[in-house]
Amino acid sequence: MTRIRWIVSILLTPLFYGCSIPLVRPSRIDWNPFLSPQTIEIKGHTIFYIVKGEGEPLILIHGYGAGMWVWERQIEILSQSYRVYALDLIGHGFSDRPKIDYTPDAYIHFLRDFMDGVGIEKATLIGNSMGGGIAWAMATFFPERVKKLILIDCVPPDVLNQVKNESFRTLVAIKDIPLLPYLVIGSRSKNSIQWILQECLSDIKLITPEILNRQYQLSKIKGTTWVLYSTLKNASDARRLEGHLSRIGHPTFLIWGKWDLIFPPAVGEEIHQAIKGSRFQVIEKSGHIPMWETPNEVNQAILSFLESSSE
Image (cartoon, rainbow, N blue to C red; front, side, top):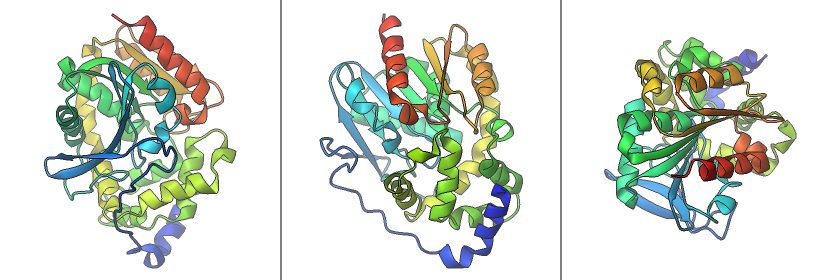
């Protein structure tokens, strides 16, 4: 059924293509007006982020096509004990979208450069989906910059072969056909964004018009199509990092939504087995973004891990 929807979206491409909107950074965070948005230049590109709290630094890293808003239900409680940074990755949210190759290496080095830019020598990385993949890769590339890892429904190294949801499987199937994946991504509408959000949540009633519009507006910012297309095209490069998981020696906690349609819990179990000494917890009544869907359980799990693994 979803593939039919994607085909329809391709046929409707002329109606939607070219309807991009300019990047206009907000002066306030709609979902938390008490936070002050900040920007920093990283290699000539403006990155949008927020920071709150004092103490050891935590960096919250969102996933593919998302933005820092997925952490809206963590920032307040975590910032009571830690200095919390949430950022829009390069090419995402309200950060710049340069036309570069969005390879795994590019994202990893970007995170290192962001830490340098805001003066963080070492931090606990908390990542969801692609953000979790960036986090565990960061721990293998620059282990001295990482204190602990919390990986929430994170991507595995062999992401293209292990992803299970219909929307992404369709993109994977057509990714090598010239122009087609670019056109499909570029033809996204509110309906297609809603279908994707429904694949991310176990309780689709949580997708309010406000939430749908929030993600849809981010997806329409000029340059987003290239970012998502390039990230997809280069995702297979992560396979070379498969053997790196066993090298991770940092305290690591994997949190997984029981009803994740994108990367089912079996994927998390494999990563858990590969990272020696890691912990693994399944969150009931949750899908691919449990920190947003079931924040009470996830926040409690995060704080418990941070406290119990303190040095």
